[in-house]
Length: 588
Image 1 (cartoon, rainbow, N blue to C red):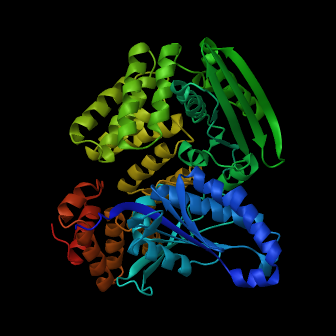
Image 2 (cartoon, one colour):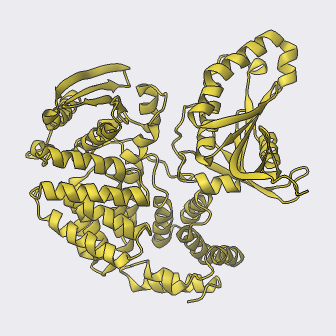
Image 3 (cartoon, rainbow, N blue to C red):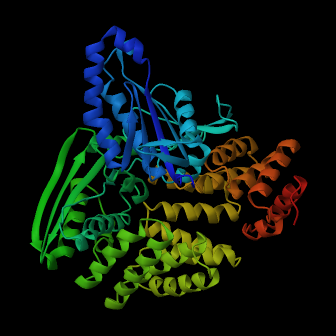
């Protein structure tokens, strides 16, 4: 008779255990049980359900949970640990309930309702290695969640665990007392002082619409307000990339604003029902913990643009901003066609999801926006930027065609006096890789002037300045981009390291490049910068080791190919970088 078929599946395994359970029970059995039960019913179990986890089994002091998504498993662990730390903050240390959590991604065997296999054993060993209140994950988990969950990781290297034959690379998640999400740390010594301008963060608006087809309105309205205020020179606006991390968070406005470094926080809720739309907004000054403006709009959908413009004006008024001559007009919407606005809102909601499929889907709506209102630069600006992202994030099978389309739409948008600056970033990119460095600088300056609170504008300005040999100005722009978006895009860090290298500040370049490699161990550019740094400081063995890592990741790596992606104005910079990589053992 053939044996029964074994059921297997890939899963994220979450193992948790209470720290010092026996000691706590001996000291206060009834109190420990009561507090533990409250934490389970009010915090832990609801968080697991929220992130679609399945509790496989529990013991008196621990549990084993299965998640289909490793991102959900990590989010759940971080949220539980941070919320539990807050709940137990006033409890004496020797009575405090804390958990250790280990998370692994692996193949599991299904045995009735239980799960078995080496993947479960690794999760259990990671949990044992975690600190009280901490979370440790395997390398497999790290590779899946890095850049997707706003937390920092500390690499603890390969660990040998009892009854686990193969060493496991373990990473510790840096857990703080603040609630999720976390702001990733900067490299040592690279502090970014707060802005002197009034700073505001616009949190994701709640969607109260019952009809599924209207869900995009909440995102669209919020992102449209953001896209308008990004043009205000007297305002410091926290970027969408950062505020979007707070979707579904239980944080108060004061907590969220403090975490992001914002003085003011705008919250809102949107409900569309048929031909009517209801919008509720409130603006909080977190320094005094007071709502300084609130409004409820209940209008026909045809008044949507009036609502958006009024919210913008009221924010400007509440913050007592002094607008420059002509700036008031720039902050008013150039779209007047309601159908165009609806497509624009749908496009924005998809665009900021930040992946290949959503980027392509957003472009369909932006193109429709341009068709419905050809006299507005809004549609062409976002169409061109979506094509540019396809090319530079590797989402396009025909990179040159994407770049050509980006250029075509950028030129269409740029001639409009109300152009929003995205098209100038695209034009700057094209100029840079065509060797037109002065034109690239001019386009970036225009982008920053039109979008003073845009991390993309500041970040790409830094990129162009770096390749033009203007190191100190590039560093300033990188830090401005990070100031705008504390949950900063990882590519800014290797750019900062390369800028320090070209300035000759090699100790700082090494420190930043090593930080970049810890963040993204398989990022070729970060490794190439570090390899070059080691050569220039005489650390040949270290350089050769990094070169070996590069070839392990990309066996087809060539120096000539890499140099082609580094459009330095000064040919001596290209010659020296080529010599560095060759010296480390990398070939053309």
